[in-house]
Image (cartoon, rainbow, N blue to C red; front, side):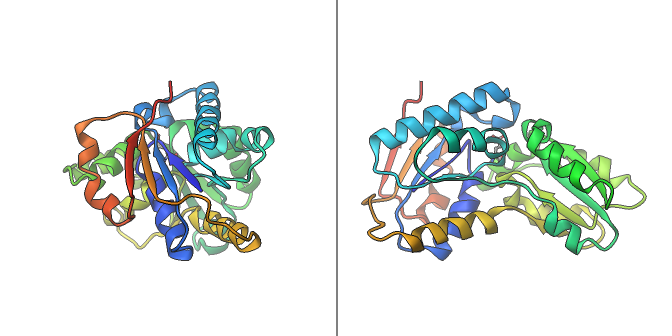
Length: 260
Ligand code: DGL
């Protein structure tokens, strides 16, 4: 199984997959050279994801690809599924659950700028605009803050408040927030703390994990990769700060991969 993201967001997906499928091996590709994807053009995201999958399936016996990134999934999942013969699963935002649980009919969706601009997200928003009030924040800063938190680099509450300011000044604030970027799951507590009332947080990994689990239940002989491999597209000192969290995921190999 290949799991990839521009950064540590995909670790939130890996964590859940690992809970359900503790014995499966995986390759995690951290495309940190191109972080943040949220600032990139759609054409770049599509080309980059094709390049990543092509490269990895030529190097490893991958059976399934997990795009652990909402930005890539909303923009290119449909294209990748057509292009490749292997199963590809993404993380796609949905407001169905939000619609069911919101009490005040005020729901927030926050994601990267590229995700919010995508026609996938525009469509899911227009599906519900007649049924509830949807507030949107497009930010590339929140993923940066998540990268800092994971590396134990300090960040100020002010940075967070600035991002959520448009919702903080509303007379009626959302009671349900859809976290449309895999990085944001690491910041649930911090986001909760800047609101005065309890928030229902939703994200997409439960569904992604279910699909991956179902796939492995249906195939025999499912262990093709012999060890867990961590690949990164650029070396910098910041990478060392991730080692403590990566330890939990028992990677046997750490390597730089050339994606040029
Ligand atoms: N983790 C990502 C997502 O789910 C990408 C963040 C970024 O690189 O901008 O959208």
